[in-house]
Image 1 (cartoon, rainbow, N blue to C red):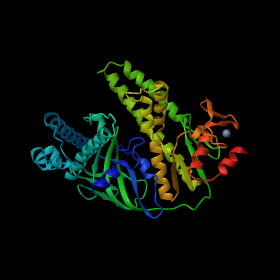
Image 2: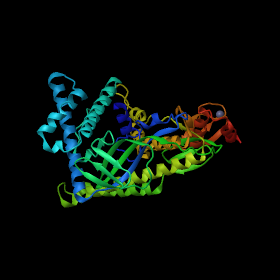
Image 3: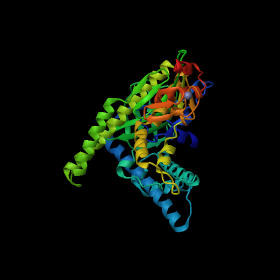
Image 4: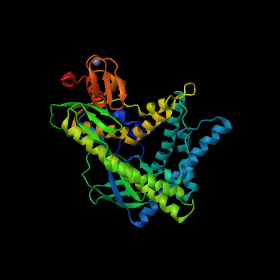
Length: 424
Ligand SMILES: [Zn+2]
């Protein structure tokens, strides 16, 4: 059960705060056609009453306190005695905590275990990165605005999905109304409640959801993901970054400036902060909508989709450089990296992968190195006088992104058709 729990936290894109850009979704890309059932997450808005909303906030607050207390426990034990503390030993204290603290006792025992597991996951990731020679930050205490979800690891244990009346039961909170906009399929495994601003959602992770394969389209495609353009396709289609995202970003800059001018504790500063948070939410929603739209279109039109293996975190690291070898051209590179992270490729690939799996399409991942500067004709390294143009001494000038897309397709074994097309 432990494994299932972790995968449900990390694997799914749709509004799941557990998903970090570029972190887990790549693993999903290797989908199997042998299995006719799959995992999938459903996200529905909740419509709590005023009292339920208050209790939901209290539930998050108490889980955050539990998380922070358990973190403090691990820190002190480490500082005083270099003694590591395991999840099991922390979980065994839950009974006592609940006996002593009537506020904590209100909530589901299993959801509290899940919160302790979440901390354990943070520590595991921390130690894994230390082992790989990285310099991760020590797991941090969660501030009031940094803890926005609680997981119930088993449907029916301290929670319950009610299919008919469109409600979900949550221990200590009540039967909360759900705005269910689509039918649920498969078997519910876990249930997670998330808060975004004042909005509440429930994420249901389901297993054994039947796939619904699309009829073959007869076409395949290679994708070059870019910064200036969101994606360039082998057949010459360019998908631009949506304009409304740029507009929201301009709005965000303005709101951030207003916030920095306001006195820290003033009424104006509170309003400015709320405004900044609201724009952030809008941007996240707009970006997710855009990613869903693009992924849906690609999956509809192509049987095989080739993409680059984007190790976004690695790219970020290479710009910063190491102690021995400080990053060259750091300013320019981190600017680019910010755009890359901003474009949310990790989220996009996660969405693309799950839609592809559902539709029985295939995603192929290829080595991204030098895809846009390798000549399609001779395989030689091309010069790149401008961001958008590459030149082979023998074969002339090409559009850099298009060359990138063609090389991605070729490396994925999608044939030479694209290459012939390039030279014609
Ligand atoms: Zn050439």
